[in-house]
Structure formats: C-alpha cells, structure tokens
Length: 113
Length: 115
Image (cartoon, rainbow over all chains, first blue to last red):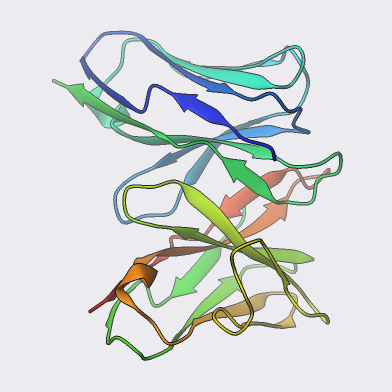
C-alpha cells in the first residue's frame, strides 16, 4: 500500500517567518502535486512535479521533488496571512498517469499578522 | 486548467435519503474521479468513472452505496444512497489534464451534512 506521510499536521507562525512542509513515502510516485484548500472549497492545484530532483518556484513558494521521487517539500518564504489554509500533497499512483491520487494527511497553516 | 462545476455546492439531507451530485467539465475528458473528504481529514478516492463502462470502486466503497453514472465525456453523477451522519463529507469531482495526464484538477466540492 502506498502511503504519503505529511508533516507537520499543524503549523501556526507569525507573518514574515519561513516554513517547510514535508511529504514522505517509501514508494515511488510518477508525479506529485501540491494543493491548497480553503474552508468550504475544493483543493486548488499549486504545482505538479514529475522529474526526480525537480525544483519549481511559485512566487514565495518553492517545491522540490526528491531524487528518488519518493518525497517532496514545500517551502514558503516570508509567510503572509493570505497563505493560511490547508496544504495537501498528493502522489499519482502506479507507473502510468492514471489520475488516481494518494493524499497526505494535510498541513493546516495559520499565519498570524 | 479545467473548469469543473459541481451541484449542489451544499445540502442538508435527512438520514435514510439519497442525494445525487452532478459534475460538469468544460471539455471532454476520458476519466473522471470522485473523492470524499470527511471533516478534518484528507481526501480519499471513491471511484473512477469512465464513459461507456461501469465505474471502478476503491476498497471500502461499493456501487450500491455510491452509484455513479457517466453518460458522456463531460458529465458524471455520484449518488450517496441511504445516507447516515457518517456520510457527512465534502464530495469532490476531479479530472486529469496535461500532455501526460498527470495534472489533476478538482471541482469546488459538494458539502453534504446528514442529520
């Protein structure tokens, strides 16, 4: 069974601080996606990483896919209150892109002004 | 990206009743997926809906409880049957996009509360 362990599950920080969220597995994923979800809404895709070692940047957010494609991290620089939300990592299962995802438990981030 | 519309967005349902959730996509897609997100938890895949064939259910989910229709390449429905309070969840429709099909987009979700 493929599992994704996401940590930390809860994070409360002050505006301007940096943070990193981790997503780890013992299994290889063909791709990994990061989503942000606000209460009462569906997850919004932030990024998809496909290649081992890949690094993608989205403004203050930096995403990295591990060399072995078993883990990923999301780093936020100088967090803002608007970054508050639930962050989810999700791995695509199997060797082909079937569209089936395994989700991590999620990280609830609160950024206080 | 993909535009995915779900109806209803929210509903309060009586125990023992059934509710059908609709998912409309702005363009044709081969596969559509239904996920459940219980309060305070992450997402779990219920089933994969392919046009022209029966849906494929994940472990722990059965067709009698969650019948799915996929009449064409832009539309799908999920019915939550004989609801109990444990079925109170957000139900999410998703599709794949991208040249390799490895980008997955979600609808806004349908938030069901069973009383």
